[in-house]
Picture 1 (tube, rainbow, N blue to C red):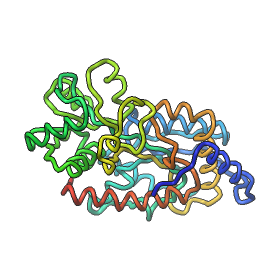
Picture 2: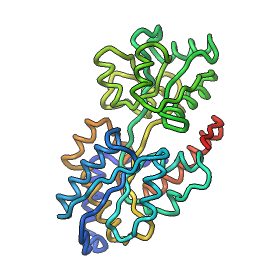
Picture 3: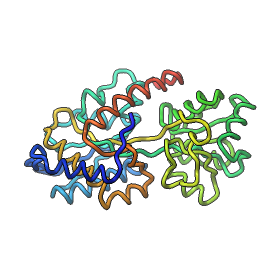
Picture 4: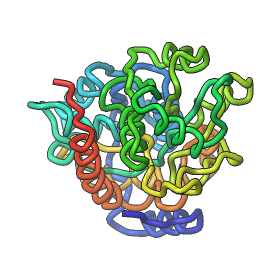
Length: 328
């Protein structure tokens, strides 16, 4: 599942692709291109999509307009993108939840991420981080696990809803450690964070970048990052793997896709442009957002996202089954 590509590899892939006759610039775009983001403005996906949209517009000479389509945990936007004409003038920027988790959570979806979309490019990941409030007695993952074992079911964690990456992270940690953690879903991440800070929740699995300002202000303590390697925005925080739990890896990954049947030359030139962003000056901005884009987390040809998506659909389905999560 892991595809390794460093910066030189990304540059080589871009150079190779641009040199290939099959990647000759198509007569596209002929008009503004809309980028559907199946979430409201803000969050982690929206600024990344907007940044890339600006870069695409500069490269291709047409506006790339963000269309936020929130609702039903991303299902509304995904369905809208699936229905869009496959003429190259609609792109989708989505992530693990709508692309993988929701397939296991919801019955009778009007879309399927493999059936209804063509993959373009895998575009990095943001890991979750286990955080506790400033007054929590625990200082590391081992102490958190010990507390959870001493008082089964009393250790609680908040999330942005059933089946979210935060929920799955807690279920994964509970399974790996043999503990009972009580899941408390919230409609607002800010409310959950406030309850962690106030001590009404034992913990939360925040996105790593979102935990940085709260950690710096002393409002929370970050115990572990749930990724294979340390986060660039939290370099002093050990991973769960470093603390004895290598299987506890959870976060949100991103991908560029298009409605099924989009012309292959369009897929190829957008893929090349995405790779250029990852390897060029935009790389530093993305890293500053906490996006993991090395060690196979981003880049390469469309087939990389195709293979990764297939494996993630299976992995998330297994997590949902093991945790007995249901939303409908």
